[in-house]
Length: 350
Image (cartoon, rainbow, N blue to C red; front, side):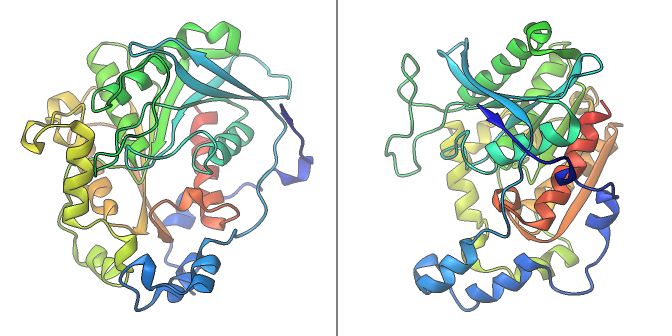
């Protein structure tokens, strides 16, 4: 399928890193909507009209001139669906490429969710790059009810199966460089939330195997199995975050244990890269980490950035102000566009 756009939809140049670091002078749009959830302890406590207003689009979806193709590629647990986004413009030479991974707590999400599809479009268009979005296998629900399965694959999914899918997608992308019109030396990986965990873990595993990627783009990732202790500024932001938008210790323990399928004490750095020793982290490529201001996972992302810096890795850490966890799923949100600006710039500059 083909997407059309007018040239003037291309974002104007600006400094997303400076925007993210600057303290806003007034509440941003997502911050204003937090008032809709004030006093509610669960989503059941939120009035239907307030819930609809919270979920409403912030603006129209972006449009880009892209060729979009769905394919299945080989993987160790059966075929892995991918969606390939290629700019229609004539390239000057082989393009850079981003292998992209949506989030969803390791149990949810797909190629069609905004965090998958809308972000892949936005980065491909901004960076004049090919984006390969990966539909990795998902775990069963925490209560044991079966998750989405693929024909020919395992009936029950736990780590390292999703990571195996991701690494297979990276290998296929590199091997298919000529057909995709990309430079195999300019392949980066990125992901959001659980996808950020998988992107970081794949980057770590591939570096250990001697085939490092060009860069990692980690958006509000799950770097550690359990919540980290916030500093004073983080604690202040989290204190005003509605409970149903937070990751409690119980939620993190359940999600992380469900993902690895064994006691958390047995978790490895390939499950949660924040567990890696400095000497293992030292082999990682340039890494961009972005977290959300009103998000418990912000603490994990900040700590992972510190670990990388301590290991000598070239790391850039940014807090996206005024947003809650998962802001890339918010179509039309200015801060999501700023995040895609930054990601596009990083991919273009590979």
